[in-house]
Length: 269
Image (cartoon, rainbow, N blue to C red; front, side):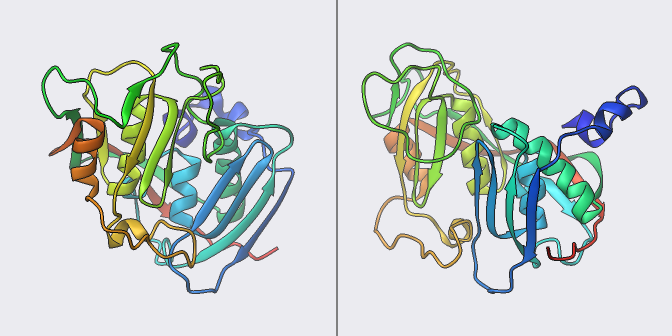
């Protein structure tokens, strides 16, 4: 992220040659609906009702709370995106292509800062107790790729660890196979709007199944028009202790942020 945002002179040529979408359609969305959806596919990207702030978060692998700026329409203006990459691309490659699109379509200018912000530490709920019923160490032990297309992972005992290494969010649920605790921390950070530091000491691969009742703020991250599950259940903070055997401890710490200096609304195409 550092090199992408502020490349030194020796990297200027390679930065200028970043890959771009082969075909991309970016249009205003005036539905007025809450929520958004974004789906990264091996050959492209689809997004609905997405803000510039969320596109920056996706492109630079950060969360909304790490993005600041005085652009008046940073969160209010919404867009629909259909984009095809030049060839097969996993999420890390798609992020770089999104950065190019942000530069070209939004004339995005940014800089980096470090700010003291509220954070959470992810810790074992009980000393010496490694996990709960929803956190089970995977056979094989090794994780697969960190970034793979989102979606329910197939069930079955014969999935190689090299294929799965995902922790995915869904309304009122976080689930995955052969996932890292750092991935779980990332998903929690997105839901909670704070950096979550993994301090569990659990360095294996885990099958994860966490269910909870989203609060109103989390419900804003659901796809447009999709209501939050109206099912009684524990809060996220209670659920992770009861089901995963870990807990979130609040605190403060240095957090790297992106400050948007300027941006322009793109013309629909």
